[in-house]
Length: 128
Image (cartoon, rainbow, N blue to C red; front, side, top):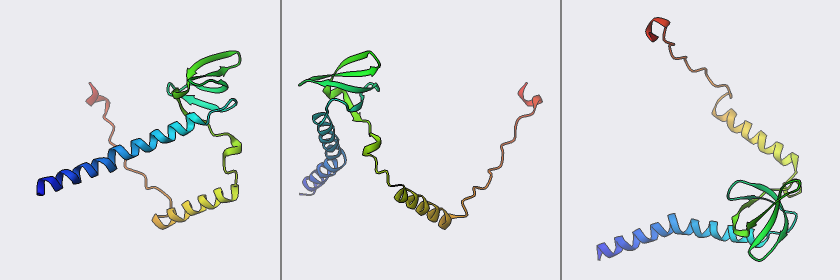
C-alpha cells in the first residue's frame, strides 16, 4: 500500500510541477496565434521583429523592414509586442509603485550600499 501511495504522490507532484505549467504556456501561445491580425507587431521564435501584413490559415506575411517581407508560419510567433496604447499609461499609479519601492528600501536600509573592499591587485613583480 505504501509504494502505491508514494507512486501516486510522485505522479501528482510531477503533474503540478512539470505538466500543468507547460499546458498553461501552450494555451497562452495558442490564444496569441489565434488572435493575430494585420497590423500587429510580433516577434518570431527566431527573434525577428515584424508587422503583420496579411494572415492565412497556416502562414502570414511579415514586414520586417520597409520593402522587406517574410512569409512565416503562424505558430512561429512567440509573442506580440505591446503597443503604447495597450500599456497602462497611468503615470500616477506608476509613481505610487516607485514610492512603495522606496518605502521597502527604507525599511531594509538607508538605500546606500557599503563599498566592498577592493581585492588586492597583484604587483608587477608577481605577474612575471
